[in-house]
Image (tube, rainbow, N blue to C red; front, side, top):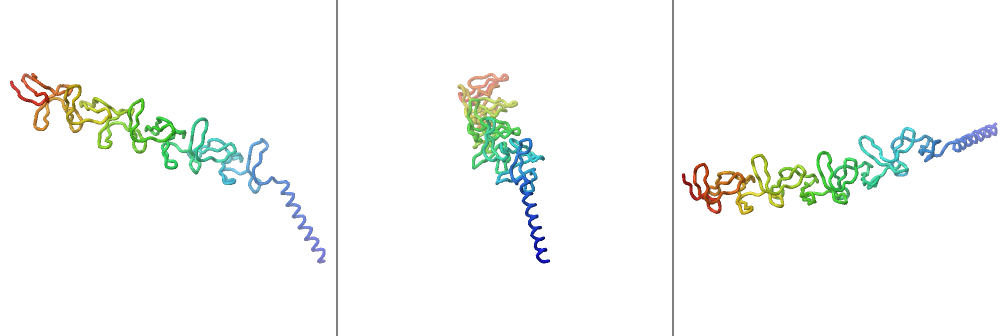
Length: 274
């Protein structure tokens, strides 16, 4: 009786071993395979194609609902990722169709001004590295031939520009290093005479606004602390002066509103009769 029971147990164990062996032979192994259409899939421990995000041999992949890995660009939750021909997610610098891109450690494509390894680069709205001018979110930026974001003064064939510490192009009136400048709508610094409303301002070759006494082309002008040229009568240090409509100081003998005035060579009023 004991011998019969042992035989039955041995037979049962042998049948279990045989069934397991047949299962292993009949079932595909875990790992990569090609389906009937020749497309790659990755099978899990139960021989099922995996889907969604997966980590395989330390690299990230993203599989569609049928278990096929995505390749190329993929947008997920508003962010762009790039997968190589084998489906592995890429990071770092990547060259695609003649443009350079940077994907962070999570695989996210960067855009706009970005700091990478201590250097600031400029990427456009599509993530491509910028060389030259680019408008991003309504602001203008400039990058050199290596894509490095530029700040401070920038001299180009188009004119002179200033980019703040974030790289953003400045326009309008700006105070820089204790001096006042005016930048046009295109960002180029203004020079020479500038009219705003009823006021005239003068900016030197560098674009710095001038104040006080100014001599141009043999004529004297006076610019207030606000930079606006004085027009007509005004006083400076207790002396009276008068300018014509252009702001040029009157000198010598002048008839104004029926009054005879005499001005010195420096424009100061010497006498008035009438």
